[in-house]
Length: 472
Image (cartoon, rainbow, N blue to C red; front, side, top):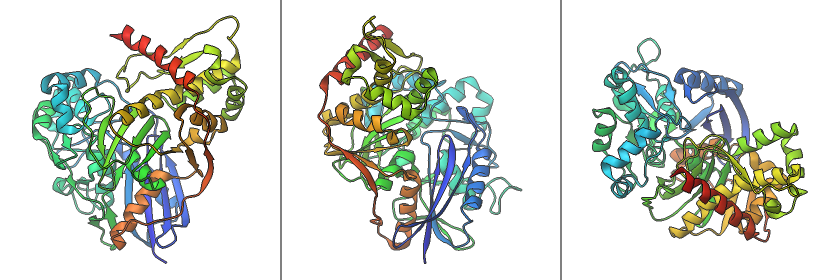
């Protein structure tokens, strides 16, 4: 039996799934926690990766592996391969002003044409610009810049600082894929080339950046003969994990919320709403991201002292549009629209509608409506949406499933709970062995084909527009 492994090194934890190459059956799996915060020492990821391997029974019988990971983060290395400072994660917004500096320097239209996206605080380029201004001595020491999955792949291949690795600190061996590189803000996903002029402006010099490894190519081969694939950013890996193809849109409800589609054509949106990322399959992956997703349910459940399921039951006790109650859930600022310092707004309350059930419903509607605005933007850019895959922890909530159908207005497919980022990475590992992406079966627990309730998104859009106008 040939085994392949996929890894999801996410914000919260590291998960490893080991699958049968031929059938796709999950043979074993393991996980380990990551530290909390928006700034993390990468060594904790490495520790968690090895703990997850151990929990999954090790890699001795695994023929190929690939690592998917949280996008955008900044891992800066000195010439000896040492990490210079804690990594800034995608959800660290201290570089918001740096994003504006990059946009002002190149112009929104030009930077969107160059990179597919207008930079926001999540992007690696903005974090490098922040580093140059806030920690100039550290910035000068940067010899190479990697993303979380790049760095872990490099370490897994045996590279790293002297005394901590078998092969030493050869920075030129760093490798990544185009999906994760497309979220750096200094990579062109159409030409598959880095943009040294953006790196120079951001950091003050041009460091080593990981080479691009294409789908199906082997990035490394370990001393034991295990092949390591190129890996992917988390959203691109998730698209592989559910088997999304052109016409499919994936809505992921994790720490952040994302709506993205596999598309034949690359987008270039100067408004900054759509990020023109690359997919892990060789296509484009236009994506809209919100900072506030599953944590909206966490916050509201804590407010009412109920479980997520109980919150959902409350929400379904209220009518669509919650009798006019609207929650715009910018609890942690927001990325789309780009309002990093904004807060949540609860509006539309009257003595008649100020009930627990209406507020509960408004919370779920607000979480989904922020993503529906992103779906509208994708459609306006020419992306076809025939069905939606709803994934992530919050997708398991029955109320979220029902309300998603009412908000999105297309069939909503909810796969069985699974590690879809890790599964997508495992599919990459399979491809380096066979030359073909596997067609493993996907278990579906429900398909919701509810009638769209346009008043939900209409009243949410009005409230969101008022916030945006006030912020300007």
